[in-house]
Image (cartoon, rainbow, N blue to C red; front, top):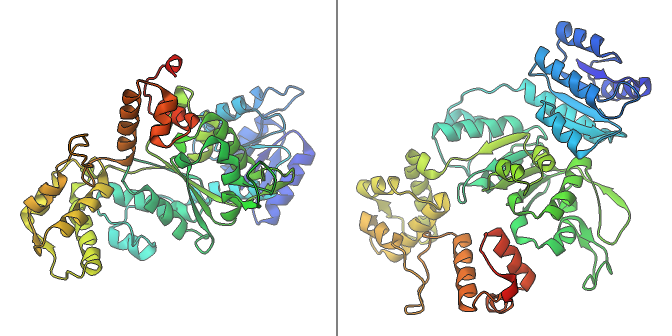
Length: 457
């Protein structure tokens, strides 16, 4: 049963008719005391709560009632609904335990999607399954691992995949965040619709709207043709927003609108479009800490983190390393036509003891490079060790680091520091040397917290 708490009889009636048309049992009340009595004795499965019950529009009455509801039944999902919404009010409501925040007038499709998602998540209780049981129930064939942490993660994403809940995947670089995002999509009802990947770290601020929402011909100087944005391409499917922690504040605001209202405008057009899309985000940054220091919007964080999955680094699941190595080797046997390839027990134990800061990506590169360089069918410790040793980049030998020893981001930081030092902190000259615009280099200097003196430029 769904309980609607609103002092406006027209709103209560509209919501009741809408929800009943979808097969839900609904009851409504305008009185906070009566609402609490219903919650105590009938235990509704979900509550839609208005924030104002008098001429006041501060939302304080609704927030007080929300706290009382959570004292009576902490687990009941609550959707806040108001005609006087604000960012601060939304954040306050989520902090107090609300699950969603919708402005009046609401969009029927989005409200029903939120109701269905929250009810589905509540009904599907967590259970402990073996890897074999998980593989029978879900499509996880591209994800290798039997570590208890990974099994719990797979169970979670399998359970929530059939809902439209937003998912935030956190973890170090190379831990397999994209594979988890694909698994969410492949096990959802949207599996036959598009899965659109977007690397937000690679989109400049000036092109963000065009890339994400599209543009019409003539919208700006170089807009010679109409362009379809990523959200429109993902309609009815899933959009995967990688490196969401790299978004600048202005782009965060633009992204928040489409996630909150499911509406956007194509650049150069005044017509509003709606989109039906499942959102999966990923980052290797601590968004909670970023929100605390003001570099990531709290309201955006609460829009994307209904379900949070934190992937463990490979060093915390060493028993999965042999499974991953065997998986990589079986693929590489076919690619390089070397059916006799295998690895010694000592070499496998040695690999399990490596710190592998690049995680699965580094392990895969190490295995492939060792196979390419070694002519032996049985790979030993020395075959891997020789490919793990870094070769520093210096002007004397001109060598690059070996594959898997540094990440792309680490190399980018090092090259920027070298360019800045060589050109004595003159940003314009360093930018030319790196093949970047001055604004692009400034963004990277700020992003990587590399000190520079603007007066020197």
